[in-house]
Length: 200
Image 1 (cartoon, helix red, strand yellow):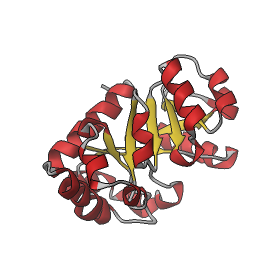
Image 2 (tube, rainbow, N blue to C red):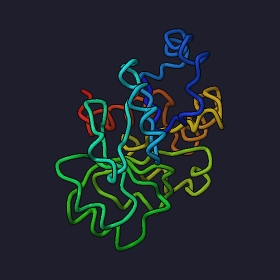
Image 3 (cartoon, one colour):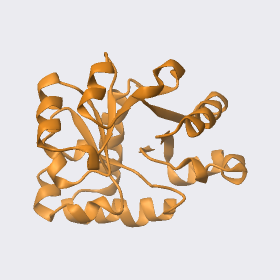
Image 4 (cartoon, rainbow, N blue to C red):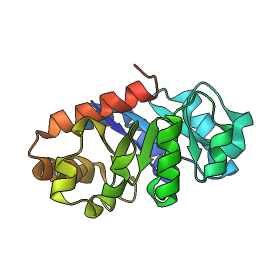
């Protein structure tokens, strides 16, 4: 089983949805997480998640009034956002992190997932690190090998990259760097994220 931490809303079209069951069977991707950033994108995401249980979303903290049962995390981008987070996992883009942010997140014992994670993010103690094709370039072999592989999540960034790239390229590259089986990496990270988001 695989969880995709970042599917772009633009890729979820009629063709994608019509073939969803076959797609899941072929790719083993069980859940797709959408990370909307605008109100318009959020409204489309809410409708989609109501119709298809395989889709979940993170909610930017400025739109708290829109939260429903398909929200699995709050999306934060700056320290002040943390004042609005109560008993919810968070999603944060690696680009938003700096030394102070990491220190505060660790002191507050926040948990969640870092999108586009790079090696310097693995100091976050209670987070999984969602790696994209681009962010994998920011890891050294030693850095990724020494990181708990149960914290390595995957993001496709579909439709900018294909799901063949996710399975045949990204997952294989991580496997080659860590000397661990692809399936164990995929299942370990997925299990950690599902527990974090209380989906299992």
